[in-house]
Image (cartoon, rainbow, N blue to C red; front, side, top):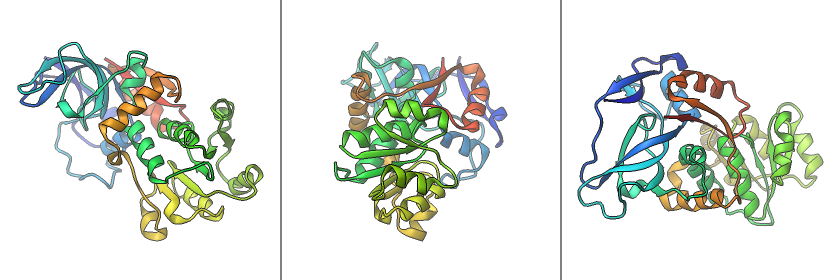
Length: 305
């Protein structure tokens, strides 16, 4: 038997429980991974709370939970040649990752660089692929000034750094407690909320040319007011803006395992910082999500198995 986070009704973090289930096994073309760390994401809580509009509401119960994981290959399916037992890997599998074992297609795994911490690897998949794809969608150059909202959060902190690597001037919205941290990354911090447009103009009197929205309509409206064209505003937090304004909504699906591997190498090299806000044991999964829902986290929250 093995442990798996499950839920059998929609609701808050308290619906999550640890279930004893039969160990899964790798089939043809698959690999089983013994999970060491698993990430948590805002999307997970939207699904188990019933708030998500991008997934069917008739979730089959009991449902697994979580996408991001890192661990060690411990079982190889027939036909798999690129992995061997003992390989250290990371990746993602929806509604499955918060478990002792996860079985995934061999082609979906990414090799964990030795210098990448297990905690960082365990929380990298969704946030990393989302940040990578959203930045690539804007074709940023040194001529750009880009606004990144929630710039200290799981997606935002990676996106802001990737945008800076493109040569762009990056302005990041965040709570005041995260401003010094953003400055240490070379990002110009700004407090969100009323008056944000005016505060951004103090940093960049000419306005902005692009935006990466990880927060919602406030960022989209501010970006438009600051001169960014709708087609150069990518929002993963306000998909209705696509119909209303013509913004884009490129997310994790826009990045490949190779892209995730490239990002993992950047993090391992110290070129991109991925802070770990908190690490919770798996039996405190409800507490971990309660902290996530509170907001204002710096970087990622992960579970240790």
